Length: 292
Length: 282
Image (cartoon, each protein chain N blue to C red):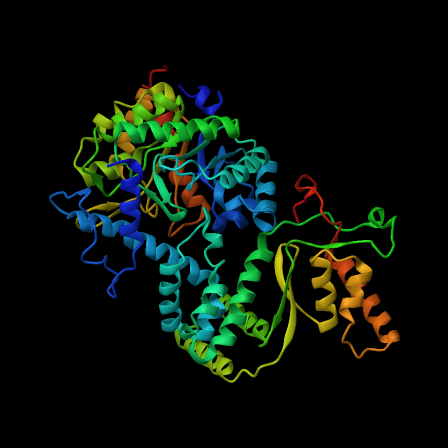
């Protein structure tokens, strides 16, 4: 048996889903493992299998607290096991474990039941949060980059900014989840249980409300900033590499805002983006990236 | 033998693993610490708080990189994206040497995020050594491989773990990060004499030593890094220092992490052995 064959057999055995009682599947292939006088070969593999599953389940649990709140703990656990069984980690870092969750949940709506749309919105927000936390920051667009302003001038969006069009105001819910988490330790279990119950109730009563969100970073903290539809379209066009003039046209294509209102909006947005450092020169080399 | 080509001829003392719960204490109190060991993967990101925090640490302290997912023992070639990110970090930290484990953890693109045990075969030694050499050539920094704790053995093994370690480091011409606690844990799980292992380690290749605590279960011992170092492991550490000479030593504490002062005090117990009056200089 070659090294590759051994590793494929062992990976197959330990990455297969655990039983309901968190044990390794009874018919696991363990013929390549030596038993000792205390543990069978399967029991020895079980140590690794349980360790693997607890590690990846814990990681997903930590990364998606809002989704846990939307679904409830048991449904979240069922979803996590199913997702990880179909989409094992493909990255050297656990940071990327949830990268395929949105796509997977779209294809597997039964794991979110009647809250599928809400759950999808929350997954999108929580993945955007992860990306906003540690994605690259480019040099902020400065006066020196504005010397050749014209209709073809392009500005790019900072790589750490994520733009979301959502059906539910999940930003509010996620902020509540964070606060509840911060209060843990300061409150009794009974108080936390009541808080969780209240929050879950509010979630179930959540009404659809289309929102546009920019998930961004400032002073190493992740923030959710609600933006207008036109601002969302303009930022999206800049992110996609459109020249500023064309991006502005895209933004107001279906807008009912008057010319004066459009000018006022643009003035306000560009001022805010400048203050937050959201724009950067396009297509800079990685060498020029800075740490924000 | 404190300084050798596998730790870039440095003479580091007692280090502590840099962990998030200790950031506040470190930045506020600025404790005197010989060096910090960082988990490379925690900082292999493009920006944000992790790198900013690391930069603040680098302003004041010496840092050595320790990886957990290079998987030198994987049958497949190393992940190039991983190497690229690692090299970016090496340039940032200027780590004098870099360590990762003598294990595997991914196959066909699926990652276990665990330190899986090697079958001790000549084929595996050859492949592992190739991967270590490839990493060293690309990263341009000395590499030390760490022996892992294990809970399973393979029928196809052709040698003992310590013979395998020697085979790999000779073929790769690399250093060793000798984890004394891991030898102890594996010796209990696989019923071998830990001193036979310890005494077979080529002293001239040891770049660094790890010590840690573990957890005992009914049928096996688990390397949990959530307890103080037990006396039998300190005894083995004493023996290791007597054979190798004073060597850069690091305490790992990764779960149920106590205060920084407690972790640092536990690490500094190593001083007793590093500065033992009857220690013969090598």
